[in-house]
Image (cartoon, rainbow, N blue to C red; front, side, top):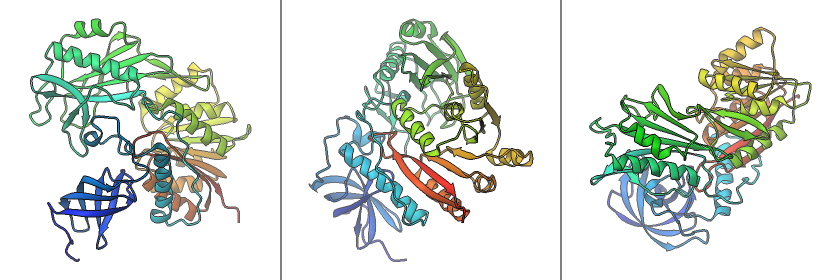
Length: 452
């Protein structure tokens, strides 16, 4: 292995030739990759090397010598430090093109699948203030309590007073909790010492303007009466969650309702969904409707068909499908999500949905042994994608077609390769921008069984 042509603390000139799936610019020195956060394809930049590994380096952008025509002013004051909105310095149309290219490259390079057309990414008319949920850790700055987000690949708090992709109602409640913590000197939790009380506030809002706040502490909630009084008119639901463990997970097991109603109600296409503190719901309500409509339109289910909805969560896609087909079976590993799905079916008077808690691979095998097979499948797995066992079960299910919804182009490409090797053909690949200003992209893929 050859020695890297650069070393730490070198200052270099670089031309950026691509952008990674995390939104970092990439240039090359004698073929050696250098990652530069904040740089855009086509730009000539000056950068300072901060890390060198055997096959790549990371640099800090120090000056843009020749800017891209797609470079715009990033309005967020903590843009370069927060790390959440990795593409905020790029105009929105170019962001959409970048995400289309990311999906195309993953399918071709990682999946080894050629001649697949990836459609242009479906974007938003107003790509700001779209997040209906925010999770904010607390920390101390000087003598005061602060909230914010963690810097990239660290747990160093970047304090903030606003986030331009968060719903304004989410920010309002988060800042009121901060006001309470600062007023009563509620000590923020320090991961390095494992001391302190206040860990996170998680805030949700719905289309109807309802708000839920969950305050996470290591133990008892101090000054709870004062917190309730401060938020009394502002939230429909206020929970206290206890997480005493040394963990990166936000929530502990114990939720206690201290004010208001147990759950909120969100609507999708005139269907109502009960949203509890731990419910999974897409954070972009407008694009969720776009995503689900696209998935169902591509699947084109018939009234006589049975559809399996794998990784069904709280049953949103299942219940939307149920109005169009004979029956739906939703499968989900998390028992609490299955309980939410059953409750949502009852809430909407839908009786042709069955929800099963368990591992998708095992449930599919058990259903097959009973002779229960699908005409079509929807799969919406987590970022790690489907296990090989689930892929095998899908291939053996007899389904004539499936829609795969993915939030990770890399695992999508891996799974598409296995599915196409097993006899499916890719019919349509449609990226949807669920997370504007960030490097994340959601993708809907229609596949059908090859019959010859």
